[in-house]
Length: 435
Image 1 (spheres, rainbow, N blue to C red):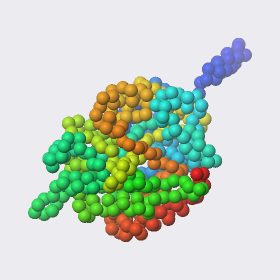
Image 2 (spheres, rainbow, N blue to C red):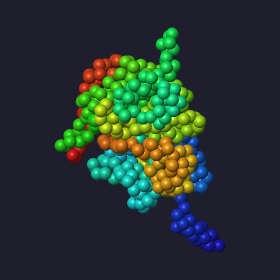
Image 3 (cartoon, rainbow, N blue to C red):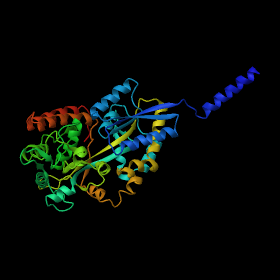
């Protein structure tokens, strides 16, 4: 009898493991930055996944207070200590750094096939970054936010200065003129009551560069590129000087904005304290969610005076899997990403909150078809990727430090740009380039 019980137990043991039973696993997902329109939906999706998969639950941690460089450092240090996240929601500056440093797992072929079938064809290239050996591989398998820079304009404020409906500046001269007219100050005290245009000076240092970069490119320059085996930058050349002078003129000559005044999308633009703001297209969803009745339109970032060099840089949030996680955690992380990419989920984080993403199911359905805001956003002359180097997060932080010093008048403009260029190229040329 005892032998029969032992044999029965052995059979049950073998059957359980042959059916693929595994010990319950708890995954962690760390997300950089925050978005009031999209993050609640991501949290809901994680909760729904957990109900569907009680043996492979996910804990979501959002880290809005960290800069991109700080987030990268936290990921790498925590991972080395055995406490890193299994799923990393970074962005197109964070992902190439983590990929080159060896902290991202290449996307398995079967997952890559499903991702590509879900995306619009021309966006496949966004999945690839340089690995530790210098070879490009797919390290990104999903997106949460995608956007390129446009100029947001308050329609009511614009009408108040006699400008035509849906006006957009043709160049920087027209931009500055409108911003000056839109600015309101108390006539007796000079106190700023309404900023004609928000100018990004403080906040995340990398974010300062992110905004500055699109103006540098619209001045005819390139932030970073490879030429004859060396990295080059225009930050201290004529385009960089033009962009920095634009900021300084807006702040100190025309006084359309002051550091410390409520700015950005929230609280500035949505509350009518800022008339014009330059932000990525995903902020259309932020504005419409926060103030559904606010009338506004978007314009391409204008090119430098007398040119047609309007350029917008693209940024996007990325889903990747930590290469140092256990095989079991990786398996379930990829399963979550495959589930997330399906139309039932991705349209909730896209269409339901007016968050355009480069997925077929998102782009080909309302509210994006026939929406004048999105139709205008799509007319941007040229959109370029901003992340061209594995250490772009560090490089953006370096540039932002010196741009901020110049804008706060703690360093002369030319000294700041020259110092930025020197440090940018020192870091950039640590990694050989081909071109």
